[in-house]
Image (cartoon, rainbow, N blue to C red; front, side, top):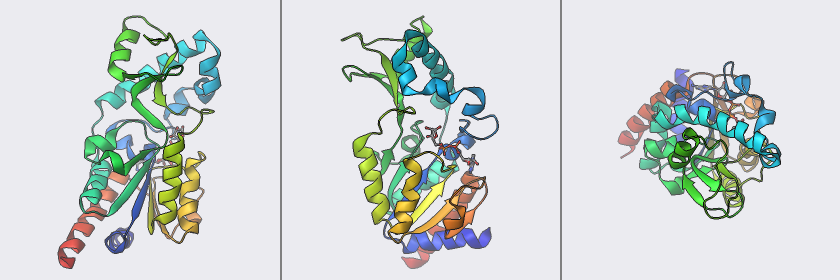
Length: 259
Ligand code: APR
């Protein structure tokens, strides 16, 4: 692994545009379970219950959704950025990070210090709630308080429309601006680093292909194998936190030598 860590660090130093693609595996070391690992979210809940059409279909489905969403929100609310999040914030400070394309809804990139304009939240955010009818936006904690006080499926104050965490559910339209931006940045980068994603959910998982097809080097850092491992120019199977901290230590040293 030493050689791979040094190699990625050299690529980052030499790179003009680094795009990082983040998945739930980047936040497990912050105490937020991922989706497809043993004990993950889809081990405990049936993904069918999270389909957008289900949410729209009945009050009972919305109540079930909010019950599950409330359980998932608790660890997210308390979570702190880990070494991998902090490494990406440092990469931005070094002026090496073009953007983070994240599938994560936990907002930890911002807590770590990445700026709004450098983070593309492809699957939305759990940190606020929106009305599906009029689009009014609410603070998540304010709505969680209503749920705690007995509102099983909260509704909009203005139009009585159904409220939902501002995340993108299966079957829900992807956010247009973010998706276009993610494709665009993936096509322009010279180094694309995947961290903590199983790379099985589309269209997000097509971003590494876009980068590779446009000539970028592809590095994958993931605990378990992914369907794209054979396409990677560099592959590290391991824990994202210590690996990213190690990589940035090498970048820091390399940048000092360069200056
Ligand atoms: N370090 C490195 N890799 C890790 C770590 C870690 N600490 N912890 C978990 N992983 C890896 C797992 O091996 C797994 O391959 O992260 C990957 C997480 O994969 P998923 O659980 O499938 O998460 P993700 O790829 O983000 O899922 C994509 O699916 O359910 C939907 O909307 C949800 O955004 C999510 C999307």
